[in-house]
Length: 295
Image 1 (cartoon, rainbow, N blue to C red):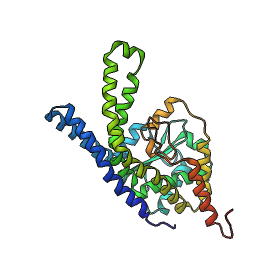
Image 2: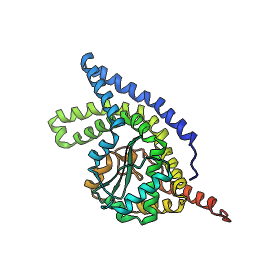
Image 3: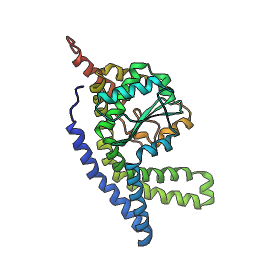
Image 4: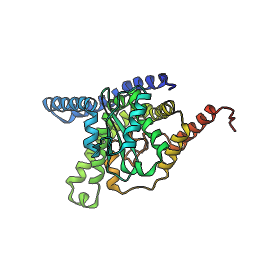
């Protein structure tokens, strides 16, 4: 396996942590402004506990949030054996594998060290052939190898808080809430709380979120040696019809950690455009093919 550390990814992870301090500063300032000192300290302590749990218990959270079910080899022998083989090739501990009962074709990985999990949806297993599935699993293992999910979790926490506030505010902006008055005022209040935090934390998220996908794509190719299979998988997943809203909600909370993005409240995608990822993989396929010339 031709694997080398991605220095640009490492620098971007460090930069993301530095930039996200602005999001944490705005979030802390708002908490201190709207609450008493005692309550503000309690809320900040709760935030710290949530962040620590999100990092140290990311695998359990992935199970809980996506309704993923851990599997054994006899249930999905091809999936299990493929993960085991690819993990050995990537020099990683073999992570547990879980299946998400969802028609949306997607995959995600979470955790760090020996506390990791790779989750795939039943829709993904139906949509891809064996080579494409192998490439997608290698992509998720590359995220674990790069350990970028942990940094993404810490850097993205203020944006998650702001997204919850903005999503709640959006639901209150109805004709009924306007006539009643109180829900509309609450939504406006949440809007002015969530929007500054969102804008302050956006740079720290964007500096890492898209590049880490390119890095994981390159890592998948280093593991499998087959850029065409991943390009083909991305093309297949990109062309899938939009599933029901219930399916989208199953993995929407882990949108930044999926191989392809689900619908999101954010106007800024956490993933680079699929056609650009495919183009880069095709360029790599040409470069890695003996005797091939680019056109």
